[in-house]
Image 1 (tube, rainbow, N blue to C red):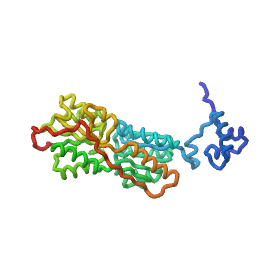
Image 2: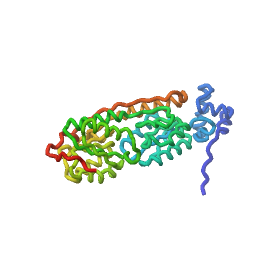
Image 3: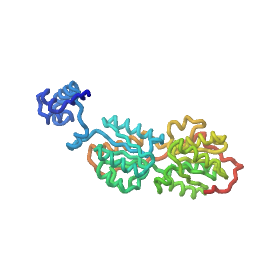
Image 4: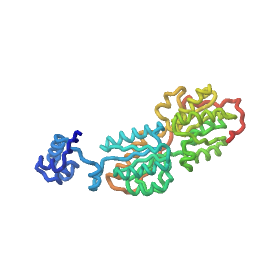
Length: 345
């Protein structure tokens, strides 16, 4: 069996440079040494192929240079885009990202967050699907944490980047109401997994305010998961005149179901999404959605975390991001000849 080559050590670097191990360690971290000494140590480290052990460094009280990133489901295109945007911003700050996917399970989500904390990540950025879970309190006390989307109310986070779901839902339901829609099916992944979430609460509030017949329907996160549910919704009588999906990934499944059923968008049924993924403007017809400005989300979240890591955990920072309605060809006037009776449960 071939033996693995031994990794160069701090002691070897010290012997080659004529410095003490402590001085070499400082030089590798850019601390307490001259620029000339720092460069000399780094040149020798590169020559020997030295790589620092981030876990060992963390155990000695230092940072690992790694940030944990936890999302509800990578089946959701919005979360894929979010990971990419956060990763870009952290890479620019010379931080690596360790990504964990809860796959739509709030219990697994808290377990994964604890696992990331146990791996001694320097900080955690989470887009939680179960923000009310009690386990977040312990995690946020162990590692600086920033929440995206909904606040972790029970946890002492260093930052929250919140979506103004009340305004986002209001904008979309008003848009559909102005087009004459009265019967709207609202597809959500969170009804069973994360009850009490702000977006679903806003649907109920604004449906009553606008006198809309809105039926909230539990749906899977992904395109493939939402397609069969969308078929059931669209073949029920009376059929909704509009479908509002609280994720663009779910809306894509509605498009597939409409195609399979021979329904035209928006002539037979209007379809709307909620996070304006770049693919949404390329569909035929382009999807009406709510834009939350992904670049601002990522920049704000990473900024909050980097501030806490640099300056220590001070006051909790909070930003509430406004929505923008991107009205496109997938929503149009409600079919005038539809039966006006309410949706059945």
